[in-house]
Image (cartoon, rainbow, N blue to C red; front, top):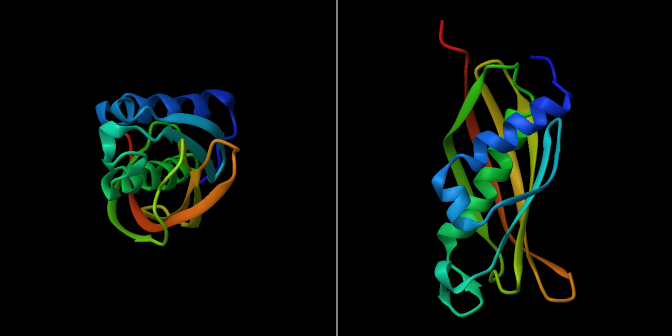
Length: 146
């Protein structure tokens, strides 16, 4: 596969993710989209918290998954799409603060499968980051329909 570095490809990855209702509901925002590398964030709100200011694991997983699989999508040829087929999340600290930042990256890109990962950080009001989770996943790459 060839890495597409065009701004339109990055925009397509952003649009594809933000077209998903759950991404919009979480308030996902892309901070960076580059070949094999994505950074996004979402606000820590009570809507997705099990106690005030502390996100549930589901929202942490979603942020990590979106970052990792979006990073994998940046390496796809135009017209291809991908989807998560497997992922493991390890939570190492509570997700407390004002924002959650997830940095996704590609571990190994193949034609059919891409192994990807993400580190998730809780960000406080002073912009200090604390690692709260790590994800490793596999995305299935799907060619355009004929």
